Each structure stands twice: as C-alpha cells, then as structure tokens.
Image (cartoon, rainbow, N blue to C red):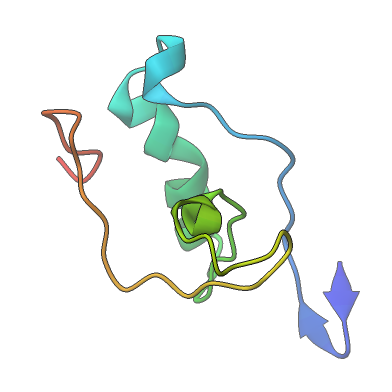
Length: 75
C-alpha cells in the first residue's frame, strides 16, 4: 500500500530460531522485503526491556546486537 505517498509493505508476526525455525527461515521475510525494493525496515521488539528508565512503547534505535545463537542469518 501507500502512506503519505510512500510505498509500504507490511508483514504480520515473525518466526524465531528458538521456536525451532532455521536462521534461513527466520531471515527469509527480510530477504523478500529487500528483493521487493525495501530500503528501511521497522521491527518491533523488547530491546528496551533491559533499561528500567524506559517506558513501554518508547522508541529505541538499535546500532548493534549480541548474537548468542552460534549461527548467523547472514550466512
């Protein structure tokens, strides 16, 4: 669809490797969005949950993350 004259693609839900999905399956939706021409990806998560000064719904911009899974979806 479009929003304010900008093309928008929206996905609902996502899979996680801890649910038994492979890293390739987890990364697949993002790869589809890139193939469709997306340049910006907005994902919701609970990253702010470790900071007691943050409130629910507050926007957090991540610069990096720790990958403790032993694999990489970039592979």
